[in-house]
Length: 140
Image 1 (spheres, helix red, strand yellow):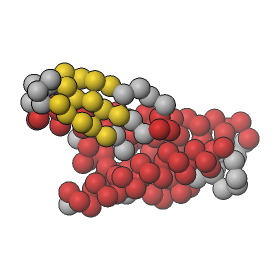
Image 2 (cartoon, rainbow, N blue to C red):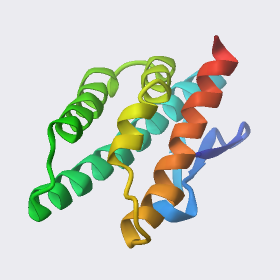
Image 3 (spheres, rainbow, N blue to C red):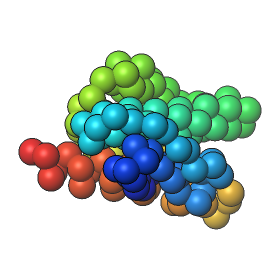
């Protein structure tokens, strides 16, 4: 997901985002490796939450605009929104656990036909789900 490089002599942490995010590389001054680790985890949680929140809003708008918002889709959107609202300010492990276990909700909201929404899902959301799954399994 995010890549970080630390320069201990200059006490700089350089955080690079994936290409699809279209975000600039950040340089943050840190005092120690522990502070750099905390900053990186915080940025990662915010990045994951913002990408999932964007996906939720995109799918909600599409379903309401087309009139295809069914109860199952409403529940899936509410479930993902609850995860973001509840665990978006907590630890990375807790967020990763809940995102990894929300595969059913993501599959319910996944676009089915070839479209820009499906490309968005495949290039942004699938890597996030995979990262969260790998992170949670590595920590468990």
